[in-house]
Amino acid sequence: MRFYGYDIHALPEGSDSPSRLALAARRLGYSGIVISNHSGYEFLFLPEAVQRVKEIDVAWGTEVVARDQRALIGKTSALRRSYEIVAVHGGSEAINRAACENPNVDILLHPEAGRSSLTIAMARSAKLNQVAIGFDLSPMIRLRGGPRTKWLELIARNLAMARKFRLPMVISADVRSHLDLRSPRDLMALAELAGMKDEEARAALLYPGEVISLNRRRWAAPGVEIL
Image (cartoon, rainbow, N blue to C red):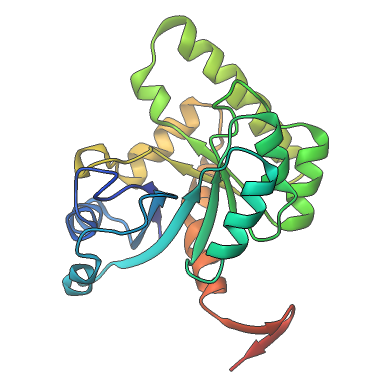
C-alpha cells in the first residue's frame, strides 16, 4: 500500500525541515509525503536536501488561504502550475463553496473550521470538479469535552455528505513537526473513531498518491496527454 502523509508543514511554517519530516515519515511506514505549507510560507528551508532521503517520495503542495472568493480564484490559478497538489484552507461557507466550485483545487481542507458543514450544493460542485474533502484529525487528539463533541458532529455531517455524493476523502493530522506525525495505522484508527469505515480510511491515505501521479503527467488539454 502506497500511503501518503498529507497536510505536513515544514520550516519556516513548521519546526522541521522537509528532509527531517521525510526521514520520520519513512520510518513510520509511509511511501510518500506532501509538504503543503500555507500560502505565504512557500519558501522552504533547504528543500533540495530531500533528494538525499531515499525510499520515500516527497511531493510539493500548497494550502491556499484567501479572504474571499475573488482572492481564492486568483491564488489557485497562479499556483496551479507550480505545485503537485493545490488545497484550500476552508472554514467559512463562502470559501468552502468557492473551493468546491474551482477545478484548480484538488482538496478542500478544514471545511468545518468555521463550524460550517458541507451543503448539498457544495458537495455537487465538489463532485463535478473532482475536489476531495480533507478531514483533519488533530482535534481528536487536542480537544476534550464539549468542543470535541461539537467537532465530531461537524465531521459526521461532512462525512455523510461525502458518502452521499461519493466524494474522495483525505485524512491528516495537521503536522507541524516530526513529533506530530502519526503512522498510517494510528491515523486510520483515529479516522474510525471519527466515524469512518476501515476501507474509507485506507482509501483516504492512498488518495494523495493517486492525485500526485495524475498531476505529474503532462496534459495539452483535458483528456489529451503529452507522452
